[in-house]
Length: 293
Image (cartoon, rainbow, N blue to C red; front, top):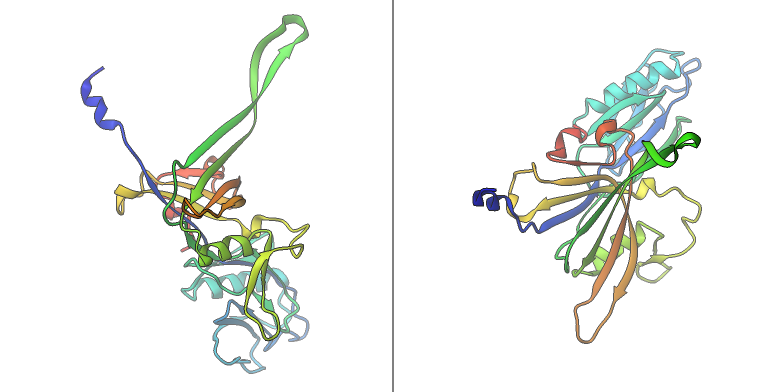
C-alpha cells in the first residue's frame, strides 16, 4: 500500500439543511356545459388557477397572479388535467406533471407556502409536500448515519441450517445528530411541523408545540429532503449525501446551567416514489438534477 493513499483520508464535517418544495395534488372533474368556466382555485399565497372556456371573465382575486387553463366546453377530466399541468408548468414558478389523472404541482424554490385551496371548481386539492427550509446550524459531536439491507436467508430441509442463498427484502437508513442552535425559529419549525402545530389565542401571541391535531395523519407531507453537504466542498456537490424524505423524531431537549442548550434528533427516512428506484431512499452526489425545474 502506497503512503500516497493517505491523501484520501478525510475529516468531513457537514452542513445540513432540511428543506422541500411545496407540492399540491389537484384532481380535476369534467366540465359539463361550461360549468367550470370562470371557476378557480388558489395555489400558495400568491397564485390562482382559473378555468377559461371562453365565456366567463377572469375572477382576478386581489393580490394574486393568475394562471389560465384554456379548455373547451365539456372537456373530460383527463383533458383538463393535461391542459392544467401544461399551464402551471409554463408559469415559471412551478413544475407540474400528470400522474394517474391528477396534477402534481411543485414549487421551483423551497420555502413555506400556503397549501392549495379550492374556491369553486369542485376539484380535490391535497398538499402532498408541505414546503419549508431549515438550516440546522451548528451541530454537536458526530452526525451518525446507519444503513441496513435486510436479507432473508434461504435454507432447505435437505441441507439443514446451511444458508443456500439470500433474498433482498428491503433497505433502511437512519441519522442521529445533536443541534446546538436550539433557537426559537428552529424549534418552532421542528415542533410545529411534526407532532403539533401553532395556535394564536384571541388577544395573545402565537404558541407552538405538540398535541392531538395530527393524530392519525400520515407523516409524509411533513417529511422533507435532508441534505448533508461537506463544509469544505464549496459548490462541489459530488460528495453530498441526500435523503429524499426525512422526518425528525425529536428526542431530548436539554436545558442546562453549565452546558449549551441542545436538541437531539433522530431522522426517520422514507422512500420517495417520484425518484428513480435505484436511489429512491437516498443518493450520493449532485442531487439537484432530480429537483423540480
